Length: 78
Image (tube, rainbow, N blue to C red):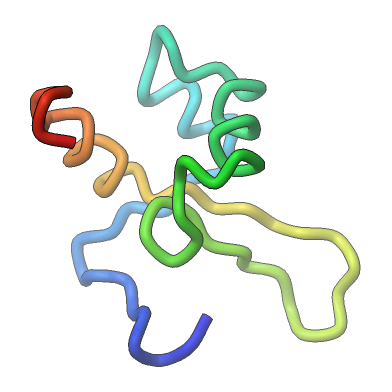
């Protein structure tokens, strides 16, 4: 992630499992992974890859604040 895509200071980053529990119905671990894979959720806004440099495995953290803000907007305006 480059510097112009800095997360806001109020971003609450959780693992996929924690985000699933926090967001509740409709946000299972598989549906969160699907939203990431499909590009529905954007890297740097809705999620980040928190792995260390030269690491093979991704460590995905969900920005719960951005997700909740998006779903607070009526569907017709998203």
